[in-house]
Structure formats: structure tokens, C-alpha cells
Amino acid sequence: MPSRTLPNYPTEEVAAQKTSKCCWVTLGSKVYDVTDFLDAHPGGGKLILEYGGKDVGAIMQDEISHVHTESAYDILDENLIGLVEQEPVDKRLISLRETVFSPLNLLHEVTDLQTDIDEHRFLDLRNRC
Image (cartoon, rainbow, N blue to C red; front, side, top):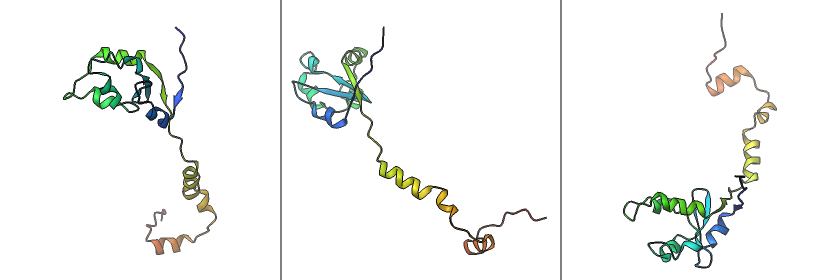
């Protein structure tokens, strides 16, 4: 069977799908459209709607509430519609990190080895024969 490429959904879009007309949940990084299952859920659709737009991992494994069977996970798999989009890394932070931590920043300054040893209390580990 050929594989399909799943779309990525931004966190904000997933979080907005929490009504009886369109209800999505996540489990880890996967997004599921459980709208058609609301009426069939043994605990009632209102329970699922409480978790609409949210991750259901904890509640599905909660022993106090009810540990879900493999068939519950199978139902989720049948309703897989995509993946949660990874948050973009702030390019400003990457740029700042490269600027601050770049070894090239240290190359422009010429220092005297003996002064550095004395002033900063570095150990002189040079081989002395």
C-alpha cells in the first residue's frame, strides 16, 4: 500500500478545532479528527469535547478515569489527519548564539600568554623540560 504524506497543522489551528462540528485531538505529535466518533464514544461526546484541540495522552492512560483499550487507539489511527507542526526556531536566537559563542569572536583579540596566566589564574600546563 502506498504511503501518504500527512499535512502539518499549526498548534493554534489544532487548538481551535473543539466543537461538535469539528473536533480534533492530538496524541503526541499526531493530529486526529474525532468529530465522527463523538456520538459513538462510550463516555459521551461531551467528554471528548473537553479535550478538543488538546493532547489526550494523559487521559487515555489515566487509571482513575479509565485506561483505554487497544481498540480506542485503533479508532484514533483510523482518524489520523496529520501532524502537529513543529514550532519554528527563532532565527534571531540562532543568530545571537552564533555571534556570542562563535570562536571567530575570540580571534580578533591578541593576548599575552603570561599575562593571561597571571591575571586569570590559569594553570600553566606547558611542557617544561
